[in-house]
Length: 506
Image (cartoon, rainbow, N blue to C red):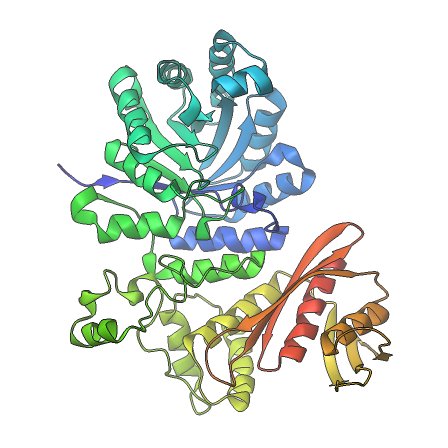
């Protein structure tokens, strides 16, 4: 039996963005979309155009720039949804409309207030409506894993007869168990007479921690498309992680006899980009892309690794975008070495971006002796993120003093365009310099801000490691993220707050 191609359908920009705190602006979405295309994703679900003018605009712009991958728009089984989806993606090289309708008893009774017959009628009508506009239609039976299997087979048969080329079986609430979910796929293949006219897709949520297991069980049972997200982002506990599916198929190829077209060495850069834009950190122990995925501390493990890396590693770190040797660059390294390292890490930068990176790299080498891969990734992310955020406010200089029993004082000088403004904030309350800089920034910008979240952690290792600061600030009832890195954590804090302020200005 020849190997099967598994279609990778990425929904980071739609379902992933619905993860609390993960919303993106249009330039950020474009950056992620182009990254997904370079990654080799087959289908990019760009958004849900009818929900807001901003979502419509972002889908439309993504459709205009992405080449190679299909660009997909989500729509309910409603005329205005389908029409908005088509208007947004009709300029795409390979457009797809993804229509969905709930099928489970609880959704039929309480959400839709429809009978089975009405669900079947709506499925046929709205799939035909979508087919009249777009040649590539996907139909999803929402909450399929809690739907009676006989009725699910009926719905799928009707959707295919109406023109759907892909039929998606979502585990919408993460309820399925792998063996049970595989039985659903096998039942569809056995009992739906026209099933060979469409690809079976699965979309698994991680509420019970089984999204990956359910997806792989479905592939083994005959599914040909997996819907997933970078870093497993998504509503509630998230979705099946793209990097895990891709590397499971690659690492266990002899078992699954299936492959994807994803460029695996770009997985870590993709993970870093999405993490940087959303402000949602990747857990250290996250499979494939976590910092500990290829780290070994146990003496027994280290001994085995020195003798043969396959004793404790089933994948090569190079295959996903990590490097075995971390420390290779220093203050005497030139542009060629830096460019080579950036390419090796899986990034593709233009000459202007490389020039900016080299300037930042040289500044960093004056601050710390040892430059790690994580430091380079952090610098690249800073360059890329600056390009998708309008930079209104920048830091000129600051000073901060804090001592036991004394009031903290902070002085900051900022630049906005050609104008330099400065202030000194003497706090009567507060705990230290971070409070001081936040109040000073509020005073200088004239904005009424509230700090909702402040996090700082080390980018690499060592006493001179860069600190990465992530903040969430509230302005007029809306939350804005900011982030920055520096060997000086106070400086990083100022720049992170300013990043959030610049997002407000944008």
